[in-house]
Length: 294
Ligand code: NAD
Image (tube, rainbow, N blue to C red; front, side, top):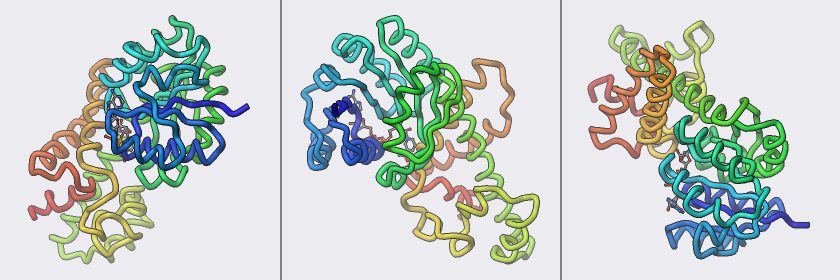
């Protein structure tokens, strides 16, 4: 029998994810505060719901892809818990703070539902192409139920442990990415000042011990390495504002467990400066221009 998924939050990421569920044979009941987002989802074959509660009514599972923890908590506790069928599975794919993820999951379980936090790695292109990576927190049973739904939207689905561990994995990964991107940018800026051609430095460092994903898969220097947002005026890609959001989540999580993250904190301060310069919408590898004083 066709499984019905309530999909809440059909923005840049959720729109493509819901379209992939439809392509893989699921029925989708969609809700978003934006009429435009809902119209796009209808165009892909989703049924428009009048509210999050309406979408969840009678659905086998609920997927949320919302901006932040406040939205996630309000939608689940305010609407979905009261409307969903007992035993329904909840999958929150938004990137939110670990504490809220754990609190909402506990409340879901107490109300008779199963829940996983399943944030994603990969941007809008991966959401549209169905090639996201999901990092999943929840019980073994909840993970097993969630896996086929997540596989319809992604290429990798990895169980990270209990509730909240998906969010923990996501912010640890992105803190590492933020710090390596800053380090890669400042190094290219210094190399240039020391008289090294960026391509030559890339050829050396990409096969030496300074190599990282930020260098060889996402080089911040235009014309060097593979095609990246740097080759397109730092448009598209992963926005400075989203990197800043993840770094703030990482420092809050670090503080909550007393972890020392000086590199993460430095990356957060630098991305805040870039955002303050009005660059929140451009790609995060734009950091190189700020460090070069451009
Ligand atoms: P977005 O702003 O494009 O989409 C969010 C959608 O949620 C919007 O359409 C908005 O109208 C809707 N919404 C907000 N409150 C709602 C409510 N109460 N009820 C129903 N709909 C509501 O954001 P996005 O880029 O799609 O990101 C979604 C999540 O995915 C975020 O947590 C983000 O951090 C994470 N993420 C984004 C990317 C990316 O590249 N954009 C990559 C990885 C993870």
